[in-house]
Image 1 (cartoon, chains in turn yellow, brown):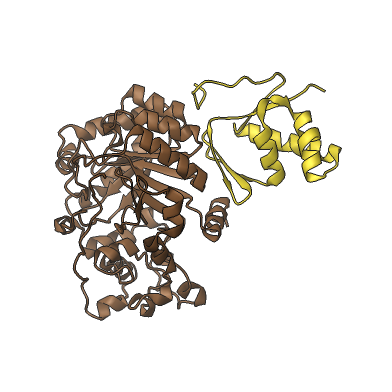
Image 2 (cartoon, helix red, strand yellow):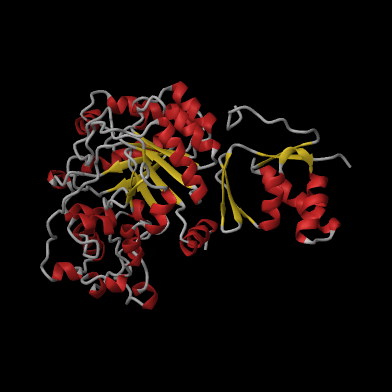
Length: 104
Length: 363
């Protein structure tokens, strides 16, 4: 299976509130709150670290979850957030973009 | 409960400021007849100072940031401020008259990911709108701005402040907003000027016009439900607090002064001299505001409307007592339901306007 790389979109508003990440898409104003596991994936979405490494390395260790279950959950989470333009997904590492916050 | 309501409740429980209204200038290119501001520059915060405040707000947990004025585009560094705010991932709303927004500015706002732009429109007729703003040609330029913003796919809303002089044009503004494809919001609240001058209050629409608004299905939805007599208040109502001012929201002036709300000129600290979080957590004024519950209100706690009134503690403060009634809201409750408020039954027509000291020289 091809590796996935994920990066946080800049076209969002986000803030940590009492251990949960609040995220709002500037594209469609969809509002999400991310639980601690989802927040950890979000924080690790630097565009350079493969998703498998984020899940296997950080999520499984930090939250003591089964690797296969964690991968399934992460895939669903990434798919949903990418549909709202909140996470960018690629099979190649994503390079940090410039100051542009919304794609033209 | 919606996710947004849940988030607000969580912020309230945690004592976090989730919303900040930040006026970055009081300067303006219009001179609206109802405006409560002094448009001189008494020493606005610099770009660096504002950036520092934004960093503090982000650290404090602020999510919703309204940038307003004055006219925000009077600041040459406006886009730099917005860019910094968006880099800090605030949800940014901009309030403007739109006069200085052309294709380039609209594109920049889109590029920066501004969530919403609110634009003031007083009438669909230039002779009425321009007479209120005292800027000839302003309606034309404002409408052009809305079109530029819409062409960028931005979310735009029209704010229609209602006064005696433009009340009859309200339907025209609704139709204009519909034609432009933008949301319409109505505001019948006219406040005293910041220096305590109450002359603007003469512009308020009379009660009979308020009644007409509250019984307009297009504006309020289900009129029967909206205008229903208030239910008897339970303990939850009496233990409730009036609004988000000082609880999950606050206001910052261009000079760094912090207040519970833009409409609540109780000086609570200054970010030029204190850390924002120290003001938010420890200001005696903000803590006093937070301590007030409906049961503590000497007149309003006995009022039939206590559970449904839009009582504004800031307007009450401007009438002399933050625990007192806000007579403008007494009128609204009365015109909505036909039931007089406790304050009206007591024969009070509001106290004097206390000295307002919202504008301060820097230093």
